[in-house]
Image (tube, one colour):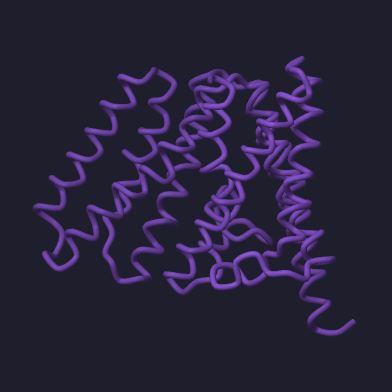
Length: 265
């Protein structure tokens, strides 16, 4: 086996093993946890995502707030469990706290970047992922199926059959064939989950799944833009074979709000 094929084999094994551990844990928490525990789990995930986002900003030399800011950023996501008033209040408190701390601790040269990146991290990670807290658990499982199956189909079909690059300047490994396979996989997963778990008409769920999957693929490309701008391949190495939390959840950041809006339209 050549070095290149061996590296691919190791990467695939890492992806499979990480998924084999992480997916059951996520599913069990989603099904059995109390609302506040689930909200805390989402908030903790946001804290890791925010830290990775801010690390990208630091690598770019833009400036970033200290790690203390991961806490209020996480609390913004957690506050979704208490309703819109709490979300708005926590968002304002996080913004005011960030700017107040910046007055006394940041060099002037990086103050604007620090505040901008902090607020951007909340908008990109905490607000988007917070929509999960407001979704019923059966809908969350369907959403996970749409994203996970779509990502898997896009990865393996794109690698095996991909010939036409989707966005070469942003993500040179993504192909049109992979993207189409991802959309089809997401629709199949959404239809099965929607009819089985929710009792929804298959045609309605198919449309929702397609739009959600399209949003997810845009989220994937958007995160690739951030990494390319920062000059890194992965947002971190916390998840073997997958990269970082941002790398694993990039689709979900865009898909979760769209999925919520479509089911509440």
